Image (tube, rainbow, N blue to C red):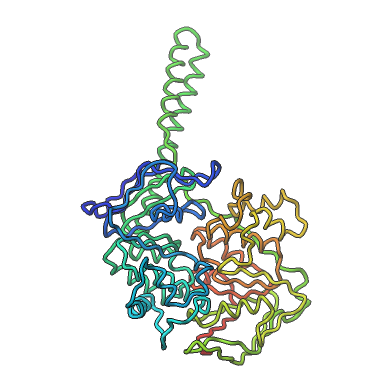
Length: 497
């Protein structure tokens, strides 16, 4: 295990000593893990979807207890967790009530603190918003509120779980600048490589195969380069050993047939080959990537003409009031629309209304089947197992073919028997994509489909969307991802405010 040398002279504020944790005997997460986080460091937590990164945060905060081993947290250390998803129980709280839940006791100067922290997360308001309900904010704005709820506590250790999800580019840059200048300790889970590289000075890598944590020093790109070099070195070493092993086996076979004293020589050759086998190292495996896939489009779409017609749309204006604007736009099969706009401009609201065929000024052909990827995964039944969810979307396909498809999305074994609500957010996203493959929609609506998803999967997903033959409406804050997808029309809500 490579030990991180980040801020070696600083004291350790969190240490894991031989920590093991599992959700069930068939679902181990950590096995005898050791690592430490030093005061003032800014550390990235890496690993594929479902490896258990968020579980580490829950163990640090004490919401989960290890099966064995010790977690040592410095006495008096204050910890704040910036969550991935707004709790459903918080949606009906006012902004002031929501921020009050961040403190164990009533805070009487809360409003000026809220104002300050909203500036930090780049969510300024033209008017006091203390009495606005959380559900009235967009997904991106709720992401900023979650981040602000952690920052307002000014913790010694700030835990951020996918903080860039739903943030537009301005929001990501604002957060990056804040973290670069933050004087305390930060531990971040994210799949945004550019974001991580801007401030990280160390990496904790959770291997989903071995359930071990490797600790590295350096920024994100340094670590990726280090890992690649290590894998190449290990492969070269094993290849050389394999040649020597085969040469000794060949010699052993040759001398064995000579008889007499030559058999002793053959035995020594076999012993040497066995010793060389012991010298082979287990090559560290990279995260698995989902298999290439296609989202089949609903048959005979070309005969329908316009699949979507937009004559007007409603955006959220400067003072959070809906404003209706006239538009003239239509989508046919094989036409892709990119919907752009800053957080809070009404993108998600428009997509929800479109998916429900309720959007004013927007007409969808009645024969068209809609496939909707929601950023909060609320189209999924969290009580269903993964297998039951995929079978429900399968339209008569047999279980064997469903399992084969699911395996391509890294959904196999115990995962197929797991209720969706117990999956990681990234795994929920992979279930959602697998369902779209089975549903064969004519109109594909995607709201931030890169959120929570391992960056290794994104080129595969982009290729599938680029090849989709139906009509598509896409919202995404990742320019590099969008650049890989054929876009025929762009509708920028910022121009209509």
